[in-house]
Image (cartoon, rainbow, N blue to C red; front, side, top):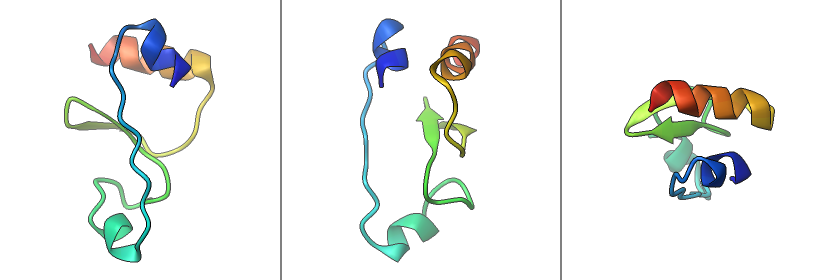
Length: 59
């Protein structure tokens, strides 16, 4: 969340509370994902530095 705020990107965190939520997620790995402008950027946790780079490239 800090990485997005450093870049001025508004974030929304959604918690999946039911297995159907995970089944309908953009990634086959429904436990974690970062989506930016409708595009799946990653499905695994990463360092702040890695995430900043990924977000900057996606802009």
